[in-house]
Image 1 (tube, helix red, strand yellow):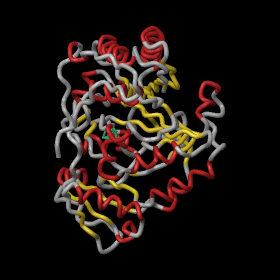
Image 2 (image 1 turned 30 degrees about the horizontal axis):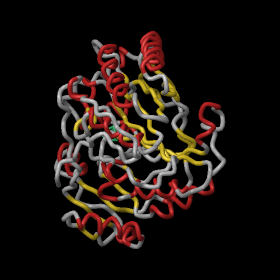
Image 3 (image 1 turned 90 degrees about the vertical axis):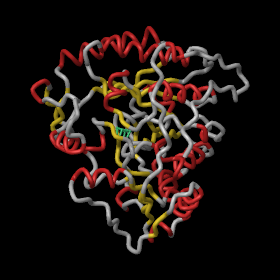
Image 4 (image 1 turned 45 degrees about the horizontal axis):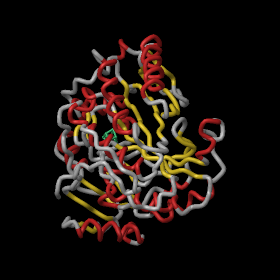
Length: 383
Ligand code: SF4
């Protein structure tokens, strides 16, 4: 596959887009490539679904062979050791039907009212990956063939949920559905088209609803002309350069993500920054300041910009640490319980977060800097 084009500032709306040379602020970003899985399989049940067949067509049109499994169980993923299993799983795309339990949506505070999964797994290699503590087994990327049914099921949830109805700042969003809890949409959409269809579904759904997803990729070309109706908020997961460069393998570069945010905002999408995971590395004020400068310069001239920020500090659990150290044995990522405070989750799970005074310092700095540098940006939450 050809490398992604880094989009030029976009003027599809008819407005003049001002060109800004972000390269002066930072070294050339890494160029990402669209993911080409080494193995693509589809289960018999998934082939029964129209979207499963659409994915097969799309993948085969890209010249990738699709293996039709005889049964609904995935086989041939485990290798001789953990490393080989990780490598095989990360290179595999499985088209499957979502588990029936996924029809009963789960609340996903503070991000959204409800979580809706279109896929599970991600081909990138972030050494702090949020999925490590949530998913079990080899990290195969599974995409769901029953997309049409998944989207239809959302209609029963309009007007329910507590996140946006309790917050006056967010009540205009309507009922919100988060579609990136277990995956990264733009890492996969060129193979599945699932998020494009979801954006169109929400765009033509005349109701107080919002689709939301966050990504570390910049592959937005196919989204620019979609009838999004302002009902999808695309957030870009960003961080300061040391975090991005050291621990976010296989993702798009920082400047490319911010350029992609700009391109979507120019064509009227509500957009957002998911600044995560925030880490108080040496020189963090300078590094995060550089990040805010990039965003400031990329968005300053966009009329009607609807920009939000979600601020999430780094945390880990005993199980996520164990999984991540298995996946990335030589990681330099700090996961030292002695330097953290324990925070109990809803179900008694222990998260290791930064101590109170570090949190207060980080929070104070971000609150002040965002207000000063990006005054149109609404901060949705800090955690
Ligand atoms: S992009 Fe997100 S889901 Fe994918 S590896 Fe990185 S943190 Fe995990």
